[in-house]
Image 1 (cartoon, helix red, strand yellow):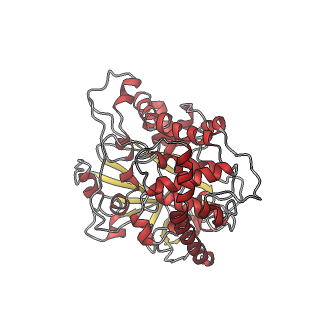
Image 2: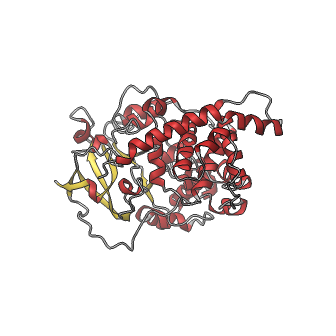
Image 3: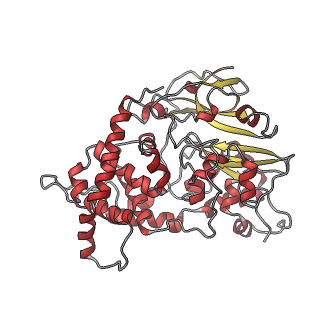
Length: 232
Length: 220
């Protein structure tokens, strides 16, 4: 593979950039604050550094603050686990769709018509009475953003990333899920650009529910594989 | 690189802390860092692999101490300077150099909203390259210790598994992260039994599946 000759330099560089930014961007941030007295409380250090960086990048024309607002709004209000829940509810209600979803997740998800999504490399894995799937990214934080939004803190945390692969049953117990010994656990470590979505088991007692009602039951955790869907 | 980021199989990191009704961003600056990084990515001056490697290059003590978006912030500053989009002096003073002209941002509100859900495409189906393995084949992940970026975790190196799915041809992170070209090659899902990875104490039923590039594997 690579011999990383550039790594040492890069590392020194990022260290320098980091400490520089940490230590010295504060005057910039303070100046920005004087212009708008929005925050009364003393902002935390990364908040100051971020503000200083944003104001510099806006000044240089590298970013448009309205574009930043739009991106934050998209992830706070539009893109989230409801997308994935609609996919799951449809798969539960429509066997032909479920078949397509398990065969070619990307194409089947695209059928749902989420605006702007195409070419996603999605693989959907099905939980059954005998198979439990669990998704992790041990190396960073890969997660199916378009379907679940941005990952929660626990998914990105050292405890989850380190132990999901070596002690999945212990980790699942911490989520309140006891997986019986005769159930096979399949752990998907997202080491590439393939994004995994768990198709959870449809709970009993939901036979009469509409797709919309079913989607309302589906949780983010169940689509990562750390929870089960409950009937109500 | 055998860095702290390669965490699979480590122990004693503490319990998983699940937060009820967790907000997307805990503080406003986290959302700004996320959005800044996305909006800057639109300039095409780096790629997702270089971006991940930027986080791996944080000193391990910082990697463990910093919050997720703090790591993003430091990484993004590092990439901006490396790619000469800003100077260290500008970072230090918070002021644009007087001689620097004003650019036109790549993303505006409308284009940002329209592309927010897009992650980019990493598949290269037009690249003609031979697949060295087929579904069902037994393979071994190479026993290697590259000092640059790699997506072959330590816990799988030298272990034997089975190809269970062929994903197609994808950009190769080990070179792409270092701006040495995409070198597209076949990507497979490889199943490793839990006992192969962790020994006889592990459940005989369980398995870990990793997506691995052609060049990470050899026939077993």
